[in-house]
Length: 204
Image 1 (cartoon, rainbow, N blue to C red):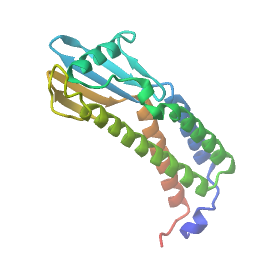
Image 2 (cartoon, one colour):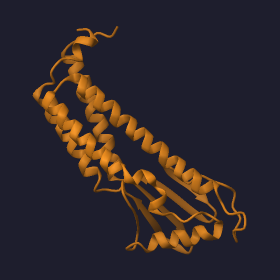
Image 3 (cartoon, helix red, strand yellow):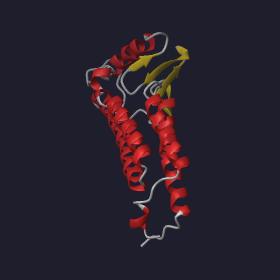
Image 4 (cartoon, helix red, strand yellow):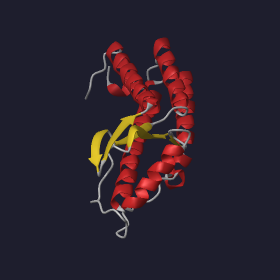
C-alpha cells in the first residue's frame, strides 16, 4: 500500500487504546520531575538536590537545598536559580495538556495521519525542551560575575551524567516526567510501525 493511502487508514482498536494510554502519560508527566540535579562535596556528603518540574523548581530538604545552591552560586558569581528565569515553565504544562487533547482527538478520529502529526509534534516538543534546558544550563555557567570571591572557568552543568565542577561532583539525571515523555514517543513509534506493517506500506 502506498504511504499516501496508508495515512488515510483507520487505526485498529488496540492502536487507539495505546494512543489513549500515551495521552494519559502526558498528563501524568506534569506531576513528576522532568530532571534531577544532585551535588556532592566534602562539606555536603549527603548531597544537595534540585528537582526540575514542568512548572516549578523544588529543592531537597523541603526547599532548603535550593537556597544552599544559590548561596554556593553566589561565591562563584553565578546568577541565582529561580523559577521566574525558566520562561518555558509558563507553557509546558499547557502544552502537555494540549497534546493530551490531541491524543483524544486521534483516538476518536483514528486516522494514521492524525497520529503521525501528533508524534511529530510531541517529538519536536521534547527536542525543543531539551535544547532550552541545555541553553539555560549554559547561560548559568557562562555568565559569571568577574568580581565573584571564587574564580572558576566558565562551564556548562551536565545535562546527563557526571561532571566535576570546582570541589563538587554534579550528577544530572532524567526524572519520571521525562521518562514518561520518552515512553509516549516510543508508543507512538511502535503503533505506527505495527500499523505500517499490517497494511504492507511501501515507501516511494
